[in-house]
Amino acid sequence: MPYIKKELRGHYDVIIDNLPKIDSKGDLEYCIFKLMNKYMSNREYRYSNLHDAVYAAIHAGEEFKRRFLDPRENQAIMENGDIE
Figure (cartoon, rainbow, N blue to C red):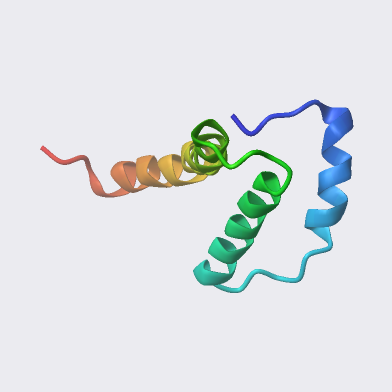
């Protein structure tokens, strides 16, 4: 889950809020990749650390899906009817 203590969020929010507009999926993927590289920059290059970087991105994506994509899918079901 992408949740950290509120007192730690401001440190990251200042940096993220000052990024230029992310215009494309490629731009977003680049930023995520660079963050993963930054995470690994002070860690030993071993499976558990690499796994942590990958699964942090996956878990953040799953949380985004839960909050934004799933409700949109539910709305489409309500508007168009479910598959029978």
